[in-house]
Image (cartoon, rainbow, N blue to C red; front, side, top):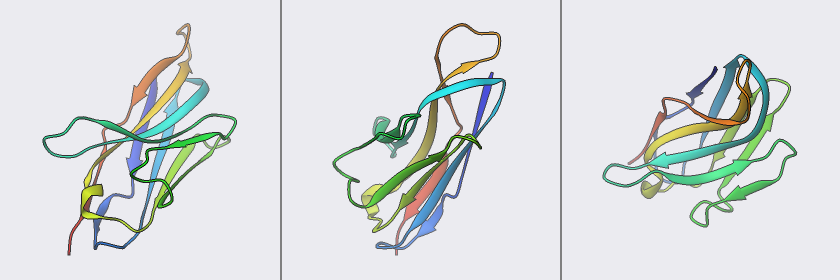
Length: 121
């Protein structure tokens, strides 16, 4: 199996910045795409950004230009630099990895437990 642990969430004022990290561990054979999702209270989980193993990225329109996704393939770590945070960015942020785990055939989705981001003055 693959375990994902998010970190870096917290309370920030509007306009502030946070950097989230997601560390993958376990019986990792390979990781293809890694992604950040978020879920605000009363809303569904939405894709924020993703990054393929080769480095190509996708951003939701709501965060493009403010958030930057990156990853360190050697360390199996993904980051989300969030600048210009707005109250509507407040949510639980989840990490997802599409990976092959040892002893399992094919790619599967693995999820972290989430980290809370609060944007408030």
